[in-house]
Structures are given as structure tokens and as C-alpha cells.
Image (tube, rainbow, N blue to C red; front, side, top):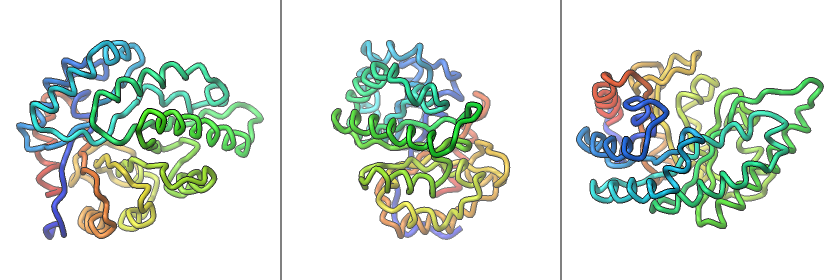
Amino acid sequence: MPALPRDFTFGVSPAFVFSRHTTAFTPADFVASIAAARDLGFEAFEPEIFLPETLGDWVGGGAQTVAAAGLDQGMVVSQFVAHFLLDNFGSIGRLTSDADTDDLSRALEAASAFACPVFTGPQAPYRAADGESHSDAWSRVVAKIARYKEAAEAAGFRLALEVLNGSLVANSDGFLRLANELGDDRLGINLDTGHAWAAKENMPLLPSKLGSHLVGLHLKDNDGNTNLPLAPGKGTIPWSAFLTALADSGYAGTLDVEIACAAEQVDQEYAFGLAHLK
């Protein structure tokens, strides 16, 4: 693979932490993982609240502890991921409810401990109700994302979506339709290459297609059919063409590797993925 046209900052996604400590990870687990990522040569990380029951740990001082550890290690914070909010987009009942308002507010409070510009909310696979129309579900997801976007911007963040396979937003076309209907170029996307490749996206065209909406990356590989979280270089994504297009697009964010694996394989897999991308 030829050298990249320009330098990038490489980071780890929260999968680096939950692969080491399970999805029930604590802020203390995150602190230990930041040092481990730095030792492997990474320079950025993404704080994340994965489970709703850990929200209090982050708001109760945990976010400040993790932020301080990142500063001590000289690590960039690329985005804050509120994974635990994703199910609020997974059904008509969740889309029409505002019961998540307090959770969103508390997650934004935790995110404010970090010097990062992006607050990311994943989009869950959607479970349609009997007789439900796509147009009704779509109008409701647009309204809910508009509410999240307003709250994030009021807290000083740019809202980004991570589009999971099977969600209402579905793919890059769905995301761009959503951004157009909201009428605001500020809506961002955290592009997960594994999700995109399994959704049959044309990878080298995605950076220019998404343009200024592209504010974050989760880099993983698969065979283009099953949405596996493999190390870059262990699947069939055309990395050279994709990364060259990414550099040409002017993307200014970090390249965050996302591999889910057994705890004893984390260092080996992330080192392999980093070396392959470099």
C-alpha cells in the first residue's frame, strides 16, 4: 500500500475499552485503557457511555477523571459517544417519547468535561410496528434528531450520527436526505467503515459524497456481507483507495480504529490495524 498523501492522527474507538473490560466498563477502566492505547502508538480516544446504568458514574466525577487522564497522556479527544441513547431511535414508541430528555441532558453534561467538538448518538436498528408506514416513522425520526441537535448545540457540541445497519437512516443516502430535510449543514456523521461496507457502500466515493458532514470515523473491516468488527486489513475494504479519497476530501478529524475482540487479543489486533492503515 502506498503512503498516505498527508499525515493523520490515529486513535481508538471505545471498542478498545469494552474489548478489554466488557461493555460494563467503568471510568477507571477507561483511564487504564488510555495509557494502554498510548503505549501502542495511538494519539486519540473517544470517551463513551455504553450502558445506561453507568451514566451516574460519568456525571458523578468520572468524566473529569477520564478527561484528566487523557490530558496526562497527551491524547486528543475526537468525539464523545453516547451509545446508551441509541435505543431511543429503535421503535415508534421511543421516537414519540421525550422520556430520554434527562438522560440526554446528563450525557451532554458528562461530555462537557472533554475538549471535543462532537457529540455522537448511534442510530439503532428499527423495529417497525404492525401497520406502521415508513413515512410516519421517518417524520418522527427527523423530529427527534432535530431535538437532539438543538440540545447538543445548546451545550456547545456538533451532533453527529453513527448510522447502524437496519436503522431508519440506514446509509449515506438516508443520512444526506435527513440533513437536507433538517436544512442544516451542521449535522455530522461518524462513518463506521464496517457498517458502510456491509451496507454495500462505494467506499472510495464516500468521503466526497459526505463532504463537510463527515466529522468522525470508526475504522474496521469485514467481508462486505457480514457486519464483523475486524482489524483493518483482515477483510476486503479497499483501504488504499478509501484513505486516499479521505485525504483528498480535506477530512480534518482523527482516524479511530474500532475492533471488537477477546481481551487477550486487543493489543495484537489494534497494533495490526494501526500498522496496516499507516
